[in-house]
Length: 496
Figure (tube, rainbow, N blue to C red):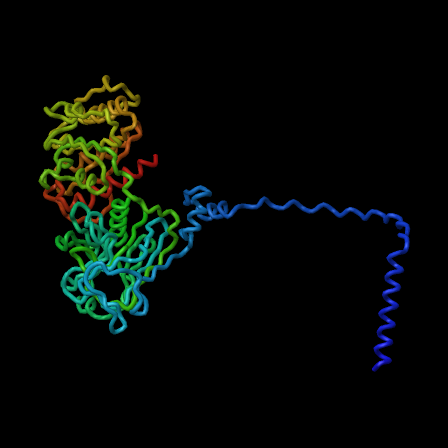
């Protein structure tokens, strides 16, 4: 062992001497430079890269945000292709807070008793082109016979509320919206016994149609429509009924989205036992969560006769419903029985002078009066040239319309003129003349002046029959047809 240690010491000592000797030696001369290598061939040019924002817009052409908005939307999760909201899971997990009534966890279900539960996070439901969503509910939808709003967009304010309701007494489950104090309900016929026992439900929106399936069965479209649970009419076209409901929802929200925020609502509390409740939706990337309606604060002038006045509804028409729903301001110059033409006393032309345009109203809503047709007023012709307002003959129907348009262009250029045609029954004696004028001279006026037309006469809609007579709407018909059409048309005009 001693020999081995001595040998190892000798080796280390030798290496140390060599290293010291190497450090003290002079540097050797540099060697000659080597030859240059051969140049490589040029690489091919790469394609210009695209940012994530550019790629997203390319694949989603309807997206309107700029790049900074895109980054924000991405961070907020709005650009996900699918969203899921779990409100009740496993009958014991509730993503919400009881505002009214009681909530118990029993028998594998969340049980509400005359309750209202506000969700921790609103479920945003898209109605954009190609939008899809499903609501999945498992359990007993109602344990009473009375109407309850199982899902709502507002648990306090009734005006403009969107809801999914149930009524075991009337054997219906329904989607609806409140306009002008009228609950407009789109209903599926479901036995009350089914509603009051445990089942699995899927409410679906896809390809523009709303359907309901129970226990995994086929989805069925709406069966009936009613106002305030009365005046029920059968649905003859599921697509038309769905379009009507979607148009109403867009009118009250001012955009192509709505949100469910609660189970139950004031006056429509829920008594139910649910094992699960969740929502699955397609992208919500254009959702803005508006704090107020786009028409809020806008001034709208109304010039018309009995239909604009609301003669069959105590003097309340779509004008008041629009103002109440959107927060817009209204000025009504409406007198029953009057004509556009200046031939008759107290005509539209004469009363137009009463309207003051100093505050530059956003819109002038002009009724194509039925009285000009029933009172034999000459239609006149539409000239090719745009004339000054003081050169237009106002004794004819077309002349009176052009005069009002020309005056508005002169004295309030920013005011948009919106002419509307009236929805009348087939039995009205002057329907043929009215139709002919709409489809000829009114179209010529529209093309000449570039005005907006809300053509209720030719609109494809569910025939509810909610009319007082051949031409005058009831309050429910204003809410059902006039008000949503006008609001959506005005919102559309804001972007022009």
